[in-house]
Figure 1 (cartoon, rainbow, N blue to C red):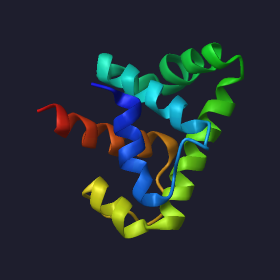
Figure 2 (figure 1 turned 30 degrees about the horizontal axis):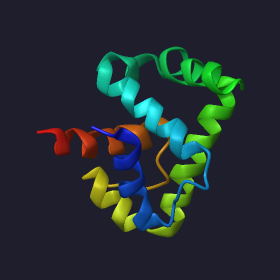
Figure 3 (figure 1 turned 60 degrees about the horizontal axis):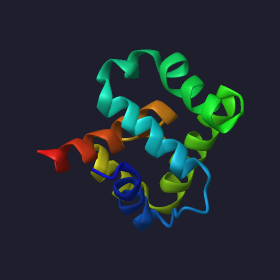
Figure 4 (figure 1 turned 90 degrees about the horizontal axis):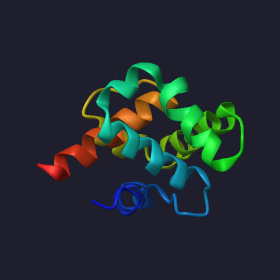
Length: 111
């Protein structure tokens, strides 16, 4: 499965395209989570730091880029994001919540 393509398809309805550097970083994060679901319990160490190393930036940059995607999706269509989440969102999802929402959508396509 091409995770980056799936991520782009999920984010396009929110007006989020590859112009955001975080899209490719988010795709890598989701790939790491698909490979090892336990990574969700140590996101900074097992996700952000791994991706940061690939992009030669700090882990906080990766977290910020994913948080930016979450904020853009929330601003564009909070109801659609809530529909993807399948639970009530009273505020913008955190970066980890956003990854979990998209991960669940991608896993559904795998079944």
